[in-house]
Image (cartoon, rainbow, N blue to C red; front, side, top):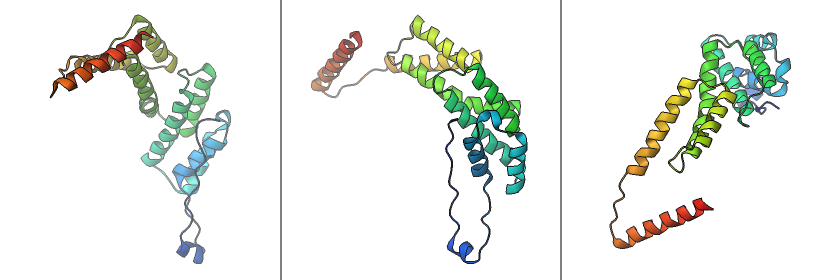
Length: 195
């Protein structure tokens, strides 16, 4: 539904079972399971507050756990390379329900969306060349994911430079056979690229 799976809490220890001690509730598991089992449009701040209270949690640990849940949902929604208006509304509602600040959301977006963009960028630079069409697709992806131009421009610059460095590194061969084998591999790679 929203990319989260239900997490089964650890079973109580033998001693806890013998003494019939209640098992403490784990906030990260409880909030994850609540969001996983509830449509995003129905996730509420009251329910999250109730989970916080039931688990006896407070402070920055709660924010971190909530930001992680948000990041996972965001990553799932972005898998298709686009976040729709409906998904944006759901994410905004989830932000409010989880009590996340703008900074928390920015960090979660960087954790979820930038790696997706970087992966697509590296795929485009596999041939050590970024065509105009690839550049336009990457810009469209960044727009669709709501990524900041400065971040993506820096990433393009760094990854392009890295690809350039790799292409200019000299290959040292220890024998003529190694050099011939390398040349053959390059020719085969060029032939398959033309197909």
